[in-house]
Length: 138
Image (cartoon, rainbow, N blue to C red; front, side, top):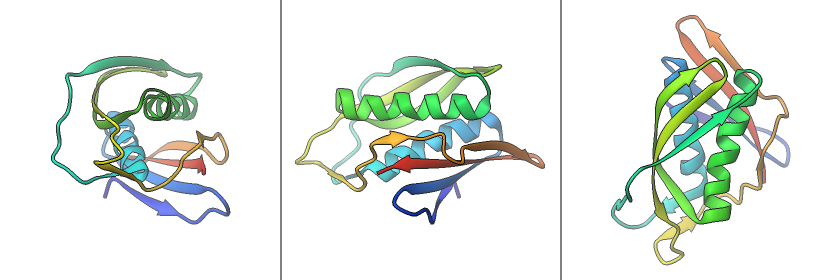
């Protein structure tokens, strides 16, 4: 399981899981995309684009990462189809993103996510696995 939704009054909360920190950030990107839209057609990804994001700590990096991906959707009409972390260092990451343009005839919006919040943000290692808690403003 990559993620699960959690109850949160008036907002949308998720817990994301990963076998590594890199896996956690990739699964968080997948979860955001899954929460945003339903694709009613065949996958037609465009060439990759690269993005770099940094933060003050792991929770800050997670918020900044998801905010950047949400901006690609809301500001540039790009639906993320995959995110591959190519570099993950101390509170910074670079990822290759595969996307396709949002088309109302092809994609259905599931959740109108307005923002990624710092409310209850958590990124922690649990044994050999990683876990994050993220709250979205809807």
